[in-house]
Length: 396
Ligand code: ATP
Ligand code: MG
Image (cartoon, rainbow, N blue to C red; front, side):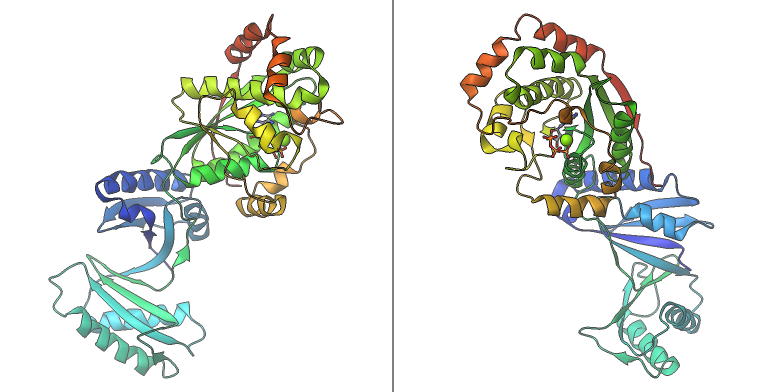
């Protein structure tokens, strides 16, 4: 039924001189999102809106589903295109649109006409009045309500005439690529994929790093992280995922340091390594799925101990969220089912029975001193041997 989509965007409309950059980023992301969709699309921008026209047949449901993953889109209006063949024909087209779109005619409406083509012989007001009258004649149950109509019948006169009345919500946020890049510490858990989603929603492009500890963590645990990245990539675009072999470092910490400090010290080395990649790839910050008090390593004291080794800002978008709220978000974005698969990531293998909840920086630094003989070399090796996987979106 629909041959085009009119895309409405919010925040990016107010960005003054930067506006065209935002629009270009939005179009870039829309193109990426529509690439796997059956059909061919022509994407243009005009007068504060982006316009997607299908060239020939396409899969409507699939296109819509993909567009609903593009940050920056506030509303998606499916549009019927008709040729301009005079007012009688237009009235007939609008009536047939309403007839097929709304089985229940017992609704109020308002016609809203815009003339992008100013040479059109009638004014917008005149078109409104005439179409309104014809609609009332065709469907006597319908009533006009100019203040709060159930159905806003939009008629835009361009080369062709556009008819639409639905605004399907988009995900909001800002187009990815408009706010720099961040390095996500991505594990196989529930939280970090959601954290990546939230930061990407603010227009940040994301790369990711996963710390893998074979043979303590399986190939399937790694595959699970890749699968999670594929889901996040629906929204963020392709993700460069670094997979770091963390086994030796983890074992070394386990051997040399008090076990109750293991998680904190491990987390500090994860941050150091992540920061190395962030620097190398021009990321502007680290991103984690931590929230205050969720586990021992996420108390205020533990987070302070983690941050102490970071020169980059650490973004923790879930910091004030309860687990239930995070779970609800992960269900919404589609990562939950994968996150709860049982394969353990490296943190769950070495956890102490009674980890410190209020680590003292002095104590942690002293414990790390016990690693000084080999740790630099080990970090260097971990960085150098990291595998890079380019993860593309998987919509299935
Ligand atoms: P998640 O559900 O995201 O795994 P969690 O509640 O299990 O979080 P932790 O395991 O303590 O919490 O991890 C806190 C954060 O540290 C994670 O959100 C993630 O950003 C990072 N992290 C933990 N383990 C790894 C790992 N193996 N690789 C990469 N990042 C990790
Ligand atoms: Mg975890």
